[in-house]
Length: 155
Length: 155
DNA sequence: GCAATCCGGACCAAATCAGTACCCTTTAAG
DNA sequence: CTTAAAGGGTACTGATTTGGTCCGGATTGC
Ligand code: FES
Ligand code: FES
Image (cartoon, rainbow over all chains, first blue to last red; front, side):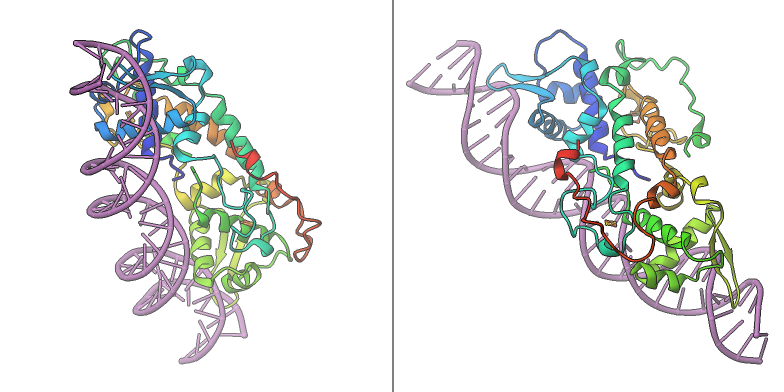
């Protein structure tokens, strides 16, 4: 189903949660409470995001995390890259030669690259601000539940 | 790493292999020989592709598989959908409500949909014919090995 | 009728992922 | 200076997914 990992999903949840409130730093546990996610998991996510420079972390007694950039300067491609590693759909797109089993027989040894580029472009086009745009002024408040068109939408 | 499954990769290998030769049907084992993949696996792939109408199958003594459409009328999105199931990056994009754990707290309960659409569009833009375009006139013949720019390319 | 071929499902082993726990380092507050 | 509140890192385990294999049918051509 080509799904991205649940952690990445959570990362967006956490980051959107950080967008609200004053500019002060958020601690891991406070974010966990607000998102309803387990605290250790939130901590893990924040660490990964900080490692890639999407978060500014501040240690010590009154420390916490803060978004490193404005929400519209962060796109989902960056978030995915931080959690799941580089965006590469296949093995053979990497630098490592021999990663692919059928290497010498395979006709399109570099054509997935075209697909990669297309997907990456699509992902870069969506910013964190876009993801947070609708509903979130405060609590749940699903204004009549958008009623997704269900399966008819999946390819 | 948001990778697509190895089976999907193989599916493209098999399909490009089917593009060469006359219009006659290909048997599963002959394709296995030519691609170097294990025969049962090839069979499995062909079955999945046939189920989604990408292949025309013919049973019986002189049976085999055949591409249902012209190579440029098949895009990678369709192949992925056939092997991996519908292209949906997250649970909550599906029709099933309650699939997502943090549902009621989650702010962007339909915004991954935007990302999905973008990715799907990107995938639909690449056809099977595109994937097979360079090298394949006959055997391996890697004309000086494209030398992919390695990691610098991954996001 | 017989052999070749596809069809559909069940099945197992391996890899990956999610989640948790533990301990260390850093830093501000008192 | 001391202490406690935070993040930093790593390692482990259970659950889930994936890759690959197998087998007993159903179909068709000779
Ligand atoms: S799949 Fe990697 S070279 Fe063909
Ligand atoms: S992740 Fe599914 S509703 Fe939020």
